[in-house]
Length: 395
Ligand SMILES: Nc1nc2c(ncn2[C@@H]2O[C@H](COP(=O)(O)OP(=O)(O)OP(=O)(O)O)[C@@H](O)[C@H]2O)c(=O)[nH]1
Image (cartoon, rainbow, N blue to C red; front, side, top):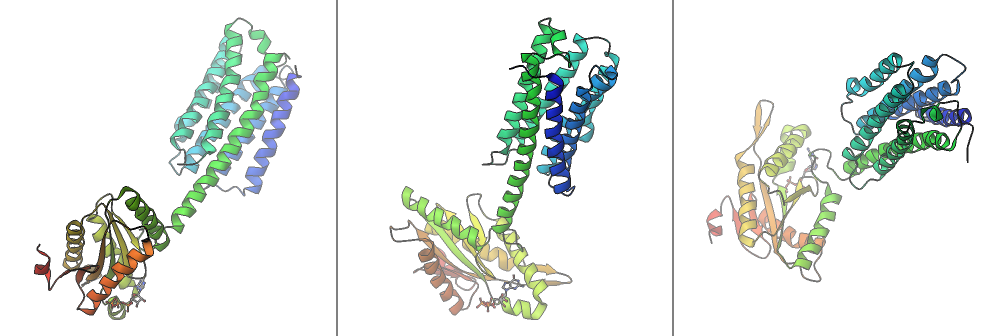
């Protein structure tokens, strides 16, 4: 099917213009989500195709050099959008040096046929390759938007390659913008694919990013930055299941700051918040990479240590207890002393165990610590370790 080449140019221009309108106006010129740069790219894309429709009716510079440079500008904006959506610094200078090369070289080579067509095509191909490179680099884990970008840029590459092959094969006049033939129809209508797939890919990429950011916020404790109750409990269920399946030990500890209400009452809630942040920093510094710490409640934390033995878990939690009581929280001119009590459970979960039942056992041990003076660590159904009873845990 051979279509009238200027008509294809006009239809691609329409599609790009409508998409640009949607993203710029309806997207309210929002810069942060990358839609402003996508819209700018689509606008440049539309203008390029409008100029192409004038080929043969206006100067060669306006209908060849300018639109190809505008296409380069469009692709540079699409690439900039990938950086912006990924919240990375946009390398503006580097990205727009290619459109600049395009306009300079095409102006110089305007009166040639093959060289100018090859230069225009090769620069656009390099830019499409960059889209593929950066779309895969900034791909959201588990996301799919980058696939649209890669496929869209890949199809564009094929479209341009058709032009290059035709020119190198000695049929450059067939690729004049006012000539209609099958190759021309395929090569140019691929412009619609580029516009649709790249803009849709970028919109989806932005959506994936904001969903990931929301999910991160929904599972984080805003004060301390560690996983919140929901996140740590979900992780606990996964760990319980894994330990049961692999028949390996799992250690959990419920850590509760002592007399935290008194800290709030004496120094104020801001000081209390600072104590919570400070304690979390102290704990995090001393954990292994495989351990997980989450905020279970107000001043309660849940620590998971997969694979830890009874002795290993007790030594680890006791070291944490020591570190917390040895490192008071600096708050203004003051140093606020704090300590914690912890109940520990270690074992291979049985068929009837779940996260809640293990927490209940660790909680019972914690309750005993609180009842017997605090600042101690106790094993569920077992021994007590702590400031006043450290000798009790020298097995
Ligand atoms: N500053 C601050 N305080 C909090 C936060 N979350 C909970 N709290 C306070 O933590 C205090 C916990 O008090 P209690 O449950 O009586 O526990 P406690 O005073 O530590 O006493 P024991 O656990 O028995 O040693 C309450 O006063 C809560 O208001 C928070 O995010 N920031």
